[in-house]
Length: 130
Image 1 (cartoon, one colour):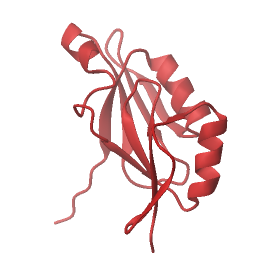
Image 2 (cartoon, one colour; image 1 turned 180 degrees about the vertical axis):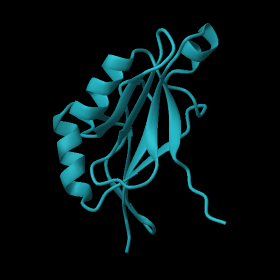
Image 3 (cartoon, one colour; image 1 turned 45 degrees about the vertical axis):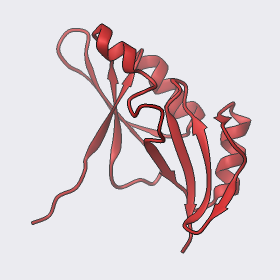
Image 4 (cartoon, helix red, strand yellow; image 1 turned 135 degrees about the vertical axis):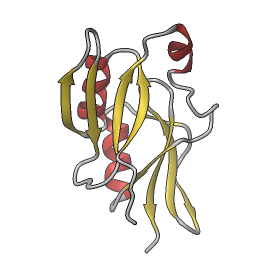
């Protein structure tokens, strides 16, 4: 049997704002933006060169969902962006206004720094040790 994660839903406040942020600031590629039922869209983005899991940008439509934007993981890092060049991506993201919560650090598993996206979700930027 073969299985894989296809997408991870990420609650966002607005489709167009989220697309602009993830494509312009994060440098992700827009994979799909398909209209669905009235007021909904199927929006998928992924890092450049990614062949696996993507983010499904899901516009919050209820008060309960809106309350979870930016806090889907209770404040923990919930998204992990691997890179083949930490310094390049750290500098590029910083130059585009991404807020890093800490300075880069070297761990046994690689070089890492925690940053926040436009909604306050915590991410790890990681260059894994090979």
